[in-house]
Image (cartoon, rainbow, N blue to C red; front, side, top):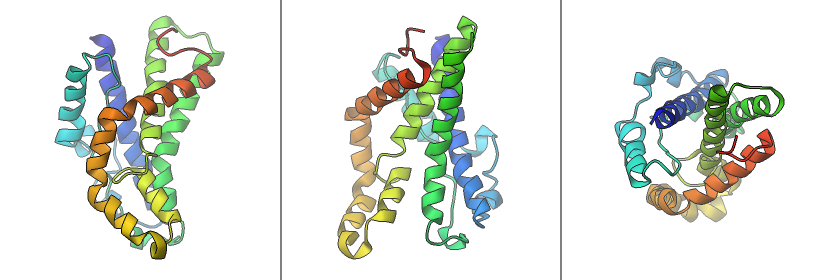
Length: 207
């Protein structure tokens, strides 16, 4: 039960930091939308999505009896790409900022596990931070709307050739994503476990 509570807290904090990274990079590029909306804050109340932050993680928790990865999401930080000083690469930079931040957090805590003697209780906490930041970073690179991976994909697909494909993904991407969460999440988890091992030198759950 304690581990589950830690996991939910770490998941939520990882999601908030992910969204903050988007908003912060957007601000550096000249877009003040997130700042004006009061979203550049660690205050969780500003980021809660009733379904994605509360209901969906609880449903996953019940469905997997606490044995599977728990997932959720916060309200996306509002961004207006027309305000970017860098019109060519601005959207790509903002999209990459979230996953890159999660990977950076995972690597920092993972290397701490690898190279320092950490007390067992703190080691458990560090392990959860590493695995869930890898999970969240990888998951957000899946090229399905509204995930960051879709904006990265769209940036490199020429409109003239892939216009219909982009429209299709924009319309139906969320439904495909829900299907992916239930049936493809294991592949994301397996990749996260692999990265955990490469970073920490340990198998997750056997610290």
